[in-house]
Image 1 (cartoon, rainbow, N blue to C red):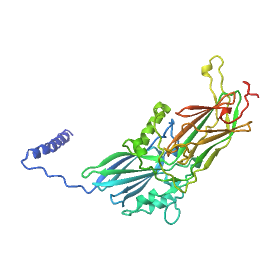
Image 2 (image 1 turned 90 degrees about the horizontal axis):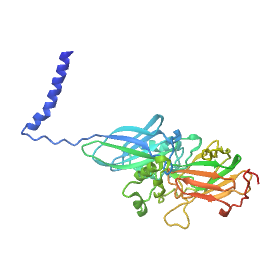
Image 3 (image 1 turned 60 degrees about the vertical axis):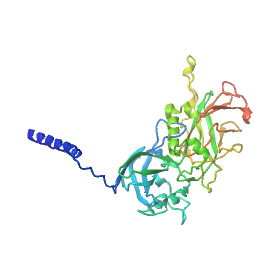
Length: 398
């Protein structure tokens, strides 16, 4: 055993000495020949929810499968590979052998199996997987075709949310490439928190949100405009979105996001109906827990099941603005009242993909409702807002 160890050390020393011997030679070291194959190391992650954070990510918001399509500089297919995942994941490492020394475009997709029919292609609609499978090695025309795809998202029943992104990289001539690539959810998320300070249980018969679109592009259509250039400050829209997401998720929604801008200059398919209304059914909100001796320890009643739902990326521009700012109306019908509350969600300036809207609705004894869109400002709705409601006593009786 001792002899083997000594032999191993001797071999290692000889190997280490070899470069120094070459360096001392009077001959010049030959230049490395251009390589014909290099390695692309990819760390694929999903961007967190933008504008309002969440402590945990449900499975439908994670990656269940990942497809990577790499294009040569001439736009033909170099790789088209689908990677099924055994469990839902937020991160996936992938290694590919590629041709070096060229500009490449890398298209990333997740959860394609939840797009049952895509439109905007020749020959009518087909599944997204069928569309992808039609592009084999060296096939041209993929980029134009995929940018024209649109579909009607289906987020029901916990179905995985489709994600997409595209990156352009300059692959080095004599080296490998390593980087982190993000995929973006083709969806917006709403979380509605009802907080009840009234003296009795409250039944919200229904509530609705108006003016959402029914169809989205598979790939984001962010306009190459002066407005967006000023917003992104030299970054890509994906890098900008990642920064906004990170800021939104610090401490559950930091004050830094209150002053950040919104991405408002983007396009939806012309075929999309942008006048849809989402309606949620009955929500029972429990009674508050009141601590007379220590009022600060009192807690409002909350819904037995917090409404969480997803809507497509949408655009509903305000008539009086020129920068693309949007507005969305919410209607709440509370049991026992003939007239519903109708109001504009405060400071919700856009519904670009991946936006998470958290709405806190606080109900008080005098039938006033306080609406807070996290992490933005509060608006108190009372009869002056256009809803005539009688005052009620502290016992909850009119």
